Figure (cartoon, rainbow, N blue to C red):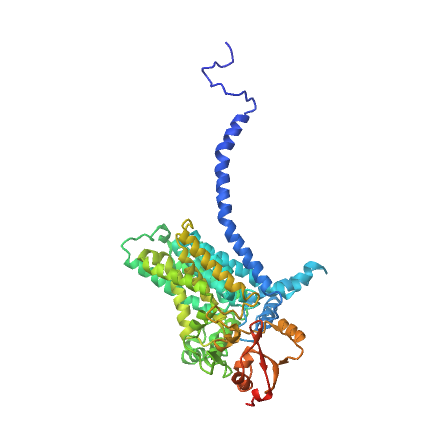
Length: 566
């Protein structure tokens, strides 16, 4: 019997293939192209976001390259160094442990041998670059969040606006806490959204970590507590009024799935982060042993003595700083505060201050996108979409706007409300929801808005702290609308030195009326950082003829007669 199979048993291949190469070629023609196609699609989908994040990183670093240290940066940096040295005691009200991230590169450099790496890590630009990295993380987070809720086009639109939002760029390049506050607030609300979509202990733990990060970033983020409570209340309302028990799943059964267990996990994680951030400095100090300044905490200490013996589960410097911040804000910075709006200097805050700041300092292209996105949201509003997605950006935005415009007295610049920008930008990105850019109308709208945004912002490069949109046609007159850190935060010292070198006849900050080329900081001119009477003569007689970095004003007084005494 032959051991060779007959032709009827097995088909004869078209080509003799003793090594099975034909099978390999068939396998390559079927499976790898599918994988390759998926990788190609993933690459194409990721290319634009990666490009925009790169633009944000490079653009930010270039814009701050020649900027001098702003007024608040040294104290933030000093507190960061102090944390790394194991000391979280306070020397002022608002500096936070997150600044240790900025001080870390220079601290690391001390352990390295002399060389290029040590030199780079010790530079202050590197400390600033740490904040910029978190600005990029904020952009990535908002892209993912917006894409998940409203589609890829909306996510890309949101990221484009983050990459060219001048206030985010300006404060995302400084050793301060404003950008950290914006990132951690967005991360906390995103974590809450993710948790409520699928209630799991791990997600509750991550929510607690995010909230803890927010609380050691800036005291503004104490607002995250009522924001979380409002969102949980809305979620409870949805469940109670829904005809479908769609969110009751197996995770609700047993103690591990209990919302009380999850709340305890989140709270514990949050407290651990806060205590680690402040190095467990006098944690569990009884309330009676605190020395408070603010009316609310003093009242609580005096009127509720039964609480005096209760150990406070956060470090002493945390509650001490919160009390200090409330005291300074409520006391108008102990009588030293000067509020400025539309040419008026006041000892009392202006209602709606931040609405005005938003109007003039946020690019009009972003405002237009936000308006279109809001109209689309209202026209397509439905209950399910609101409770599943929209409320997580609408509710925080409303709470921030109400609080800062009508409750908070810290009207020192738009940077204070940077925590509201993530919600604002996600809603603005919704104007592109459902777009595939195949229609001429979509392409034209996208081109106009993106071109308008980029042109407007780059026209100020590299001066983004004093950015004003096209509602201010003459940039030399921006000081007549807003001042303080909206314009000048001490960032243009090098540009002033260069101007003095090329204009040796210029008189910088003269003490009294004089003629000639006069150079004055905007905040000195309006009376915020100098006596209002000091430059009253200059405000009355002249208008600026030029600026230095849009924050320092240049006047030409023709004769002594044109410069009357005060």
